[in-house]
Length: 116
Length: 482
Image 1: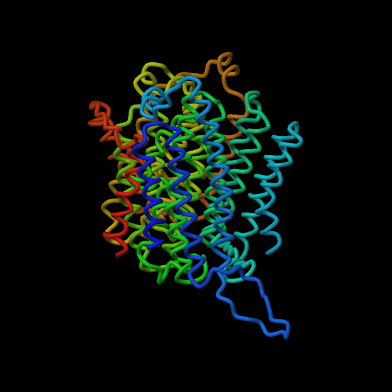
Image 2: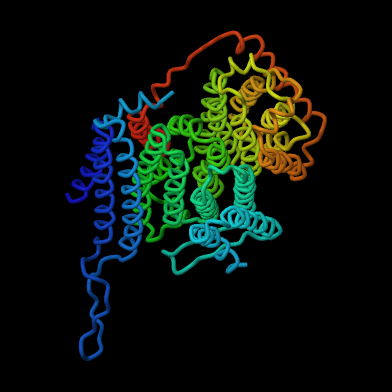
């Protein structure tokens, strides 16, 4: 069920990139898509449990086996989030620069005027 | 050797940051870092056994350095050196440019040694960012749009790739390439889609011609010479490791070689012709993955040389170039490079082509021979340009020493690389490329010169590029992996 929602988010972003005419909206749509991917990683990480993987023993020294979330996908997606953020920032700067000469930011107009 | 490898991977990034701190030493530092990579590549060539490293546990970073990656590393180093020398005297290039070049160099190196999906993802994304900054360096509207388009396409592809990577993790609890075996077909399809787009392979690679032709020549040389190979290398690696993936990669190789040549033959613009030829040559690399490293080396050198030459030609249209004679020294460099890529003996393009043709599967032979013939026809367009004796005064003004030094590095590399496969020089091996080239030139004079076909560029539009990814994904999933 959750998985279906995650994939719907990814697809929403993907189709947004294709069908939105405004360049700004395309960038936002890409962000939606990457949110979906991040959510999918979190979902996969929480297959076996939701708790933070910290060893917490009872006072007598026995370690309770708690159903903990897999830390590896979360660590990996943290890297991907940072990369995604920097790419987003770069794109927005590019869009800002383009907006000076193309205030409407319609991507097909920009494409037509800049392709030889 | 292990710690040396890690130090070598980190070194270019360090140099990139130092350049920003000490801008006056930018060129020297950048050149030094690229030369280090040449040294490292010679060291790894001397290693008898592949070097393999696993950092941390089964979910950590894994690296493999063997002959295949050594070839790719050497290509990267030589092309970067040539590009830095080419830009040496240009006052328009700031320290920022060199910093980005060397960071790009470092991330491409990282992509050539890592064998797990996440390190590869990070390397490919750093490549996207550095390339975007280099493309948008002139800061004109056109360059920014071309850069944005590139960043969009590659980032969407990499997001789909990430989904594939986590699907592999779900099965194996590890991100190594080895996990591709036993992974569900949708995981393999998503990962392949990402790599095909980044590598500029087949229809998912149609972003490449515009990006490579509208950038400045040194940036085009870097992109065509090495950057696209960062996507091609993992595909070749996967084909070597898994017997069941091998025919898929070879199939894509043949299709790409033919598609690229078809577009390149009818193209009327020099830089676009070179860009489409890159698409087709990447097909040659993938057509025989076990010897792809050598082919990638010769192609990287020759394509960088050609892009640098195309940058100083008086015009970009073949029609105009037929009217304006180009200076003889430039023409000679152009002809040497064009001969190498067509597979003429004496240059290493010949050895690479013979080696690739020998390692083809039987069903590939016809397709690849057609592609080789087409390549000869494409480069006849460059070889038969009119030329005149050099005009000294004009020459001095427009072309610096840097250009010639860069050509010496690249073309010298092409001649020296002959030694890799000296056994190629047998009579039958020499006759076949000569016949291919003769037929290619015949086709040029009889057909290509006279007809004017304009192939539609619709598939190169932004929306279609993104949409085409879903088509390729469906194709990969149903037709290939399932």
